[in-house]
Image: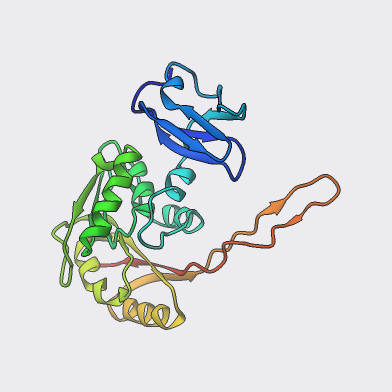
Length: 252
């Protein structure tokens, strides 16, 4: 049964859906309003009607929605890129992960989800406003317990050593490659995302100079398909370029 404080995805259709916490308040939508306390005691998979008679289905929230519905004060790393980061890197329950540039906490949400229950994400962000917003997003998603939030700028090295994975998401990625090298375990990976070709080139060449191997650069594109009876076709808009992903492995 759904109880107070549970995270819920309320779904009417692709355009009308909300990620909320079960608590005593009223949700107003374009399809009418309803009291959230009326959800408590129901089971996931049931529905609730607004005052206008529109049904919203009560669903278990999934990671994609938790990432996409963070309150944004910065651009986020999208799930299409996060998926590749997760499978290209050593992230597992119990892992030690360092993240520099928390932004709005989209990637942090995924990292915290996969390192729990015994791992830790050490996140660094120099902008206090961004850090506080990301912290609220992680708290709403029920994942802040596995994140250490640090409001500071790293230049030479991270306090943590023997890390299983380092993610760099700042504008001048190459400046933190030395710091990442000092913190990573041998044979473990670093990842970063570069918006432009110029940043990509400088980052890759710096990784080569610093002794990283197995360097891979890629761009992930997603093309959704509208499936309709007799008129299926690709969507006209698509999440295409968000950044170039770079992965590299530390050797001793």
